[in-house]
Length: 361
Image (tube, rainbow, N blue to C red; front, side):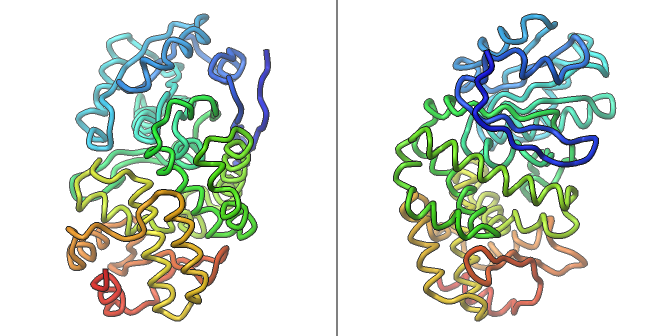
């Protein structure tokens, strides 16, 4: 039985794909089979998600040769060493180039499974089945895949688009409160970069999101996916405006790396990074303090940090920010704000002012 409530299309020409959003979608065989061309499927999951949902997905894929690999859970395991386990499974079961990987889990699983799909026999198909809010609104959409390096987050990877995204909103019922809030950070980001009406809706409805109201969640996921799909369609390989999707991420990645992967959740680090970008935008004279207060208030109400960890000194943050994918020709670029819903990627800022802003924390 078809139970899709919403479908968002990512328009990439002959590589376009749908994002299906709704309740109970994990069990719908049609959503998978219409996108699988071969007979071999490898489901990649982790030790937290697999006991909850792996059997349901493999049942939906019962007409295929379906195998599974279960990875350890957590950002600290997003490494080349753990990633190799996906290839071990593919080769052990003699999977061909016609096989399909299904990524069942959060952002870490999706990134690693997608990168494996981009690399195995120089590229195979994969499907994203995100089970966290952060993955449903952000990491499962757009084709960014990869693993971390001890010196920098997501510095090893590839662009590789999925065949489809199946976002079953019922999986959010098993998500703990901390992980749910972490996903809200990415939702807030979309309102800030180019959707001020959505930001205002979040201000009015954040309590409903945190209470897991089904209608509010479905709306926020759909609106976030629409916003991201529009940016990705215009700049798939991040040579221009797609970098706006990294609002808060340069600061946030520095926090994650500096504190040790997994100490702060990705969304928590991004939330603090968004507030840091807002403050620096005010320091630069690009945004008024009223908008900064609105941003910090919404982040705080989302039960997310608004400041970097005290243990991380300004010079260390500066050092880690220098190892960032947005650094071009030795110049650090940041996503900054000119107001709510108006963002810009720029290297036109004073490094001394940036250092002073970081020191102010």
